Length: 327
Ligand SMILES: Nc1ncnc2c1ncn2[C@@H]1O[C@H](COP(=O)(O)OP(=O)(O)OP(=O)(O)O)[C@@H](O)[C@H]1O
Image 1 (cartoon, rainbow, N blue to C red):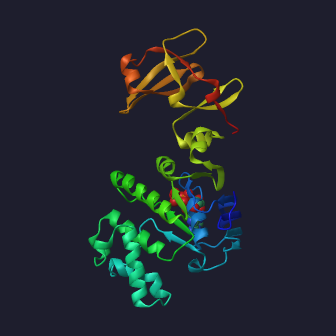
Image 2: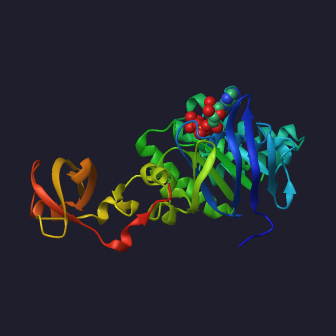
């Protein structure tokens, strides 16, 4: 459903000389949604984000926010705010002055900007660090400050460019919970660039998968994961096999492949690899036509009847779990 505050990309294009980084993409970001732009390195996701933010000129097309084309406005007048990968904090300013900086530039008086910055630090649970310099903070704390600094302008859309990539894996998982909480509390639109499938699945209401300057598939996170439309999306989202059957190419989730003793009417396979993953065990199987299939079994089921490399097995799946691929 469209609302007055949606963000829409209309035939948005970015060219750098001969390179087409973003090729006439269309997308509607619903107001108040959390969307991840996902794709491999060089697919055009950062260029897209930077064009929305106003840090990159648009070559063609429009960016419409709340009914207005914002593509020619300066960044500060767009209703968007950007949080950068390296946080870009001013090293010589205290935490509270970093957060208050954009209000100072706008000429807001000292008391008002201190009060507002204090509220933002509260929001990201950083009040006790207000007087410190960025160098005296951990990576996760710097990130909270960068978030507070982006949010102080009351944006309708917060743009996040690989916001978690500088954090260690443990902190990354904690901070993604924080991002989700913030987005829910503020109710504004978040657009988050990542090349991590897990991150996108954990955070996003909607996932936009980009490949070679175009949108390959967009939709609710569960739909993109469960029903990939192309081989690229199936492979990039992970957790799927792409199989060639006489009637076409299909994706099937690895945990929806059933492995039994060889039986008539099933596909024969041979176990070539076994990987213990904690809650599950992944079997790599070689089938007719040299097709490699991965089957993921709950660990209790695997260990009830362990299979060894070299064993012959029968593979089957429910037809309704096969997803026809268009390319
Ligand atoms: N300033 C620039 N000048 C020339 N080409 C550029 C410039 N910025 C990006 N490109 C090219 O545009 C394409 C898309 O780059 P972009 O940074 O948008 O991709 P990305 O998906 O964000 O990649 P990554 O995950 O590596 O950041 C790439 O081919 C890149 O080399």
